[in-house]
Length: 339
Length: 256
Image (cartoon, rainbow over all chains, first blue to last red; front, side):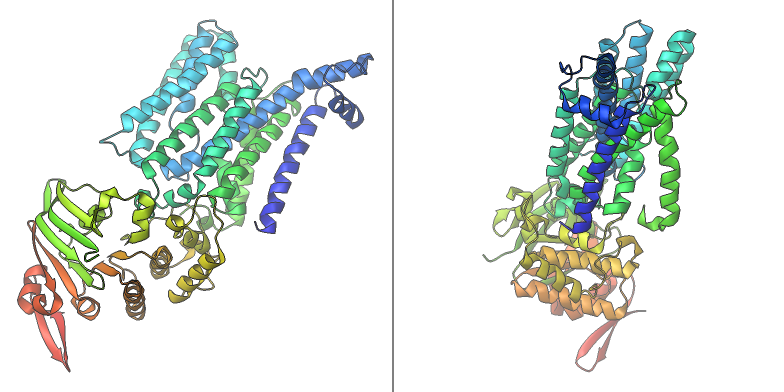
């Protein structure tokens, strides 16, 4: 591996650690580095922490901030990876994890659950089912004669997504004020109440990263189109199906964990392409890590910038992402970004 | 092994249009075939069918005495290379990354690019005049440079049967000759064979030994150039008067 690539991945890892440290230390109760270190090195309910301050710090860190930072990181990772997969699958640089209506399906189902007065697990459960159902619909509807072409898939997904969008608006209009607020928060990305177990989310992420990495060389061919990939011996149909399923599961888990957080899945793959190039063997791990980092920092901003008011994390990812993206667009030749 | 490619009773149509009804065609090692015909007559569709990108309505396609669809995709790609008519470049990639893709059928999933492979990439870049372009992003290349890069990718793939769909597209005259020389030479080196879709009869008579003329309505003529290349056949093929002009010991064809 080139030294510059190694250096870049080390920087990403350090950024992830820094983001985690800051997320644990900063908030309405600030925790000093010494206290943080003490809490982290001791076990969560260490008997050393008999004094009140230590106990409170430990509780804040382990019960509030750590789960939240981890939720942010994992959902960001899932979105970064899903963004790369969708862009390859649809051969479209403008594709993002939500473009095929996965999040729309999840949101519609989640809002229905909220409207029905369900809470917690049931909302997340419906969100996940909604996401998977939506993906299944896209897949079945876009199959024509066994070969699914990217444009057909894209159009089917976009049309379904706008259908979900209309349903979401209808649900928002039909519900009372309190419910609407809960719904809006869910729609814009809510990390305050993580409902998916980290073990499951992490397991799925790991599996998805490894599988996508396994297919990275095929993705390198697929960006030139199905014909080119097939003439070089890639099993395109199987690989496209795998990419669709992986992207759908990643997006579904991310949406279930944190609602729809916009922009990460679109901007992160492009950002990483600008920095390390389009070789998917590097792009996949880089976009995964960078997505997690962006959402973790965005969440830190979301809960501290206007504290005690919490902002939806999707607003912050866009606030960080839009200027960063525009700056890169301007400083590099546009031809480097898209065809 | 007598035949690289043996097509029997191939029936092929696309969107209700018949391309061939009873195509029987054999390509032997060392032959250089041209496929000629008017726009839309089905030359590319025929290539796509040979390369297993399309299905034929009926008929048999054998590659080296085995049905072409019995090969594993990677095994097929080692034997059969296909220079597509054009590629689209939606995502930024460098010339070097593109070249490594050409090795796909030859290396395992986790295999690192060996020195031998690096050397083959270096050679191919040199032959196509793209040495020094390794770090360039592909969409900063000109149309002709992109075409040379696609040819470079095929040289790295290094198949036995070379399907070339308009190989000289976008190339200047000097590069047309240079690239055709390289492609024909590379195919001959392994006792392979080229099949090129070409529109210029003079390029065909310079580089090809045989020609398959798709004359429309599912009809065709095939044979060696000496027999088939005359004013009547070419005029009928192009639906345009073609004149043969003798210069020294060669015959050139001009559209009237």
